[in-house]
Each structure stands twice: as structure tokens, then as C-alpha cells.
Image (cartoon, rainbow, N blue to C red; front, side, top):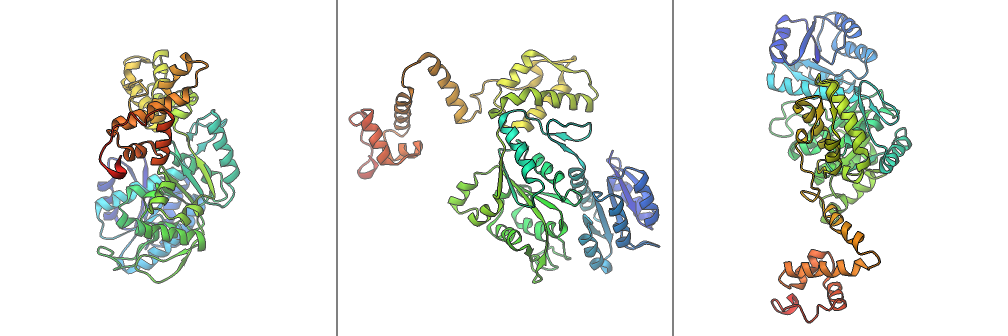
Length: 468
């Protein structure tokens, strides 16, 4: 159970927090800063919620002392309206967030959960092969593509440059970002992760850059954004392809000049932040469509790390299965659970559209559902036919396997090309313009191929003029 330390000299505040956080979290109380620091030194604390006005040592002094003891411990400052500027100063000194009295219970719970999540990201060690540890996550992969990725992490971690991490959903982009951060020269500073897809576009700019009071409806006080908060640290922007052009322009300015302005503000704020970004989007296509800035892409893409989908590194599935099996059999109190050969074979044949995340959830579910100490195929609850839900490459690949095996010495390419053209023409009712679009080629190219394979006299006329 996560432990939250409440630091306030008013007993009713402690009572309120116990009602809000129980039974999900364990609440520990301290009524002044000295006692709070003593408890942090001898007890594992996951989050501190501290009033700015305290007897003896005020909140800013206490924050500095807490950061000396544990740089990665998230601290949320509590304040009244009269001390708002002090709370903002505390944010600049490394506080995670501030809340205003009187309390809004749902908002407090939301902030606490986010702070605990961010603190966990900074603390949880990410191991690269061949290392491993009891506590933390291990990036598993002995395949050639993963070995190249490990090399890139080693080459870029200590260099203060932007890194763009690309890959399908579930391939482990956040793990790679954490590995870069933990091996960087900023590892003792803040690491903040922002999922751009999870925040409405209207609020994302405020989340990243902050806002001034009255800048929009509901902006009741000044807010410090994540870039300002992460000064000297690292910020990880997940799903960056979902950002609006306005937000993209501000991020470009931060990368180029190290400065920005809060929403509704005129003050220019200077920051020193290392930026890591990730996307599962085809950025080049987004640039062609005009939805993503080309200049921002080149600024982000100083170093690019491409994570392969799990179906492209099937040789890593047994090791990943072993890792997740050990992890969840321990976490779920079912140590000793193993997996049958039939279930292992099924895992190797499945297409994994959800990638490593899907495999992890599959093993976790199987550990729970297994009736005995051996996971059987039925415990996995997956379909092994790769063509179901597979990519075009997988579907064609499997279909052609038998052709290559049974047609040795025969030129397969012309026959496959002829079949594709025939299928496209059938699909479009003989409309060459539409068929060319389906095939991703020009109409002139299609006509030349049709002539090569003898289609000219076979294709019926559809429409008129250029629609033949």
C-alpha cells in the first residue's frame, strides 16, 4: 500500500485526508516540518502533501530539505489564496503540484494518483540485458533489432539531445524513455511523462506550459506547466503526433530557444529541459497531410529509435513469457506456476496486435485463471491463427510460404503482380482509376502492367472518359 505523508499543523486537515485516501492509501501524519523530515528519513514515503505555512520551518525550507533527503519524492504543496505566489515558487523548486484550500476531494485524489504515478516512473529501475533486478522493469530482448536498440540507448543516454521513439502501441516506448532518463546525466532530476492523447487538446497547452489567471474560463489562478516544472530535468511526451499545430509551435520554440510563455501571459520563461518524445503515428504521412510540422519533426528526430512490433521479433517471445510468468506468479501469490509446451507453442504462433503489453496481460490473466500449476492453452484465451487480425504483410507472408515451398525455380513475382492487378480490377468493377488507387500506383503504371500481362482486351469499360 502506498504511503502518503500529510504535513499540516491543523488536525482537521489530517482527518479530512484520512477520509479521502482511506482505504486505498495509508496516511501518515506530521504536524511540523522537522517531524516530517525525520519520518521521511526512517520510513518509505511515496508522496508528501505539505502545507506552505508551518510552525518553525516554512514549506519552502522544508521542501529544500526533503529534496536533499530524497530528490525523487513527489511533494504536493497545500496553500491558501494569500500564499499563491509562494506555492508557485515551491513548484519552481521541485514541488509536483499545489492544491488550494478549502479542498476539493475528487481533485485532491486525482492529483495524488498522478503524483504517485510520476514518482513511480522516476523510482522504478529499468534494466537492460544482461542486467536484472528484483525491483524494477527489465527490457527483454535478445533479437537483433532489440540489440540495436540497446546500443542506441547506450550511445544517446548521456548526450543532451532529443530522442524520438517510434513504434506501435504496446511495444514499450515508455520503458525505453525511462531507460534513457535513468542512464542520463539528469537522472537525479525530475522525469515527467505526459500522454498527449489522454489530455483534451483544449487543456494540453495549459498542462504543458501553464496559464495565467483569467486566461480562459475556469482559470481561477496561475498554473505552472510541466515544462517549467521539469526545469533541469527530463520531460517525456507520449503520442506527440496528436498535438494541435499551436502546441506543436510552442514545443518547437522550447527546443530551439529554451523558452515559452504561459497561456494568456506575456512573460518569457526560460527552461533547460531534455525532451524525449514518442509516437505510434506515421509522422511522415501526417507531415504530407499538413497535420504535423515538418520543422518540429526534424528537431525531434535528432536520434530516432524504432521499436519493432512483437510479431517481428518472435524469438523474444519465450524470454518475455518467462519474465512475465516469474513476475506475476510472484505478485499474485502463485509461485511455481509453469507453462505447458502446447501453450508456449500457441504464444509463438499468435500475431500479438497489442504487442508486448498484450502478451504481458495474457500471461497475467493466465496465471490467475490456471486451475493447476501448469498454464494450458485454454488459459491463454487467444486465437492462434495469425491471419485473424494480422497485418497485410503477415497475411500475404503466410499465403506465399506454400508458394515458395512448392514452386521452386518458378518466377513468382510476375504471377503475384498479375493476381494483385486482377483482384484490384475485380474489386473496382474494372475501374482503372480506382484500381490504381487501391494498388498505390499511378494509372499510367497500371495500364503498362495491364498490357504486360495481357489485360488490355479483357477489361470491360466502366463510365466514360478518364474513368475507363
